[in-house]
Length: 348
Ligand code: MRU
Image (cartoon, rainbow, N blue to C red; front, top):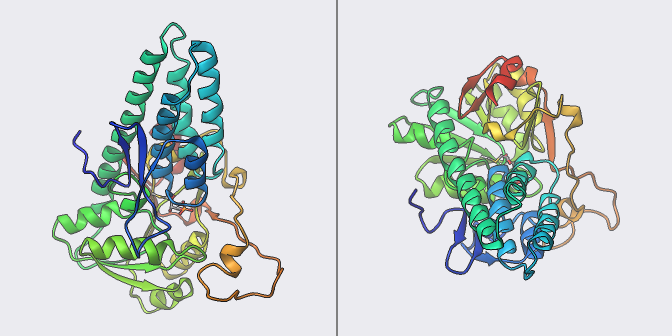
């Protein structure tokens, strides 16, 4: 596969480094980072320099490969142990998006797949697996785009929450892939982007990437979606997802549940777009999904010139919530559109 230099996540083959666009600097500046140390890769995932479930999966796989290249250990068994430790460190960086542990798990399966392999042979195999995971993401997102675009009619207005676009994957995204594909098909679409408090992925990232792509996008505060829906101005909701439980419950950015409840109330179809790698069959239902809790300062002071809450105030700052499957009209995966979640195990 040919790769544009500016994919969201890429491998610098010459210097064995992970290359990411630093999403904390958007939309002001497009800064690319070259990372090759486990600590800085973990930091980049935790600080959301690279974020979005598919993107952190690919970054973790490439990151583990570049770190493995730097483990100076001549004994193959000791080398494998060190690489395994780095894998565990990267995998634990964030808890909710299953793609992170899924991608590291695939890399570790390759690491331990053939104990007879030399270190250079294993490195080659790790490199190839990381590239396979990246290629899979590109293909999968294109297919989600194709499957989702079939649900979009000319002239539709679509609401999205957070950023599940190009910046959340290698190249196309999940929830925005149908939008991009529908636009390519000549359909006129309007997108309404929730700003997505507290980290403003909708304002900083979705509004940025859609406007750059020439898609008609309007930004709104999270508390404005109800009024838009009440006026009949939203035809469908498309969101991404970080982990789908076996019963179809789906964890996504905090606030998604509220949008799903609104959509149900106003009779607006609510679509969750997810690669099948986001389905976690070992997790029976949404209540079992671990929800990441984040730094209180993201709510109380970040983005403000002065703190906007009293010093020391208790803050509730979960990064995700779970939408029960009853509120999800359909799940759009690379394998098709799933409306009956008892079929999820067959899909994966
Ligand atoms: O905390 P973030 O920015 O990583 O959260 C991202 C989301 O919630 C996305 O909607 C999800 O990961 C799907 S991305 C295709």
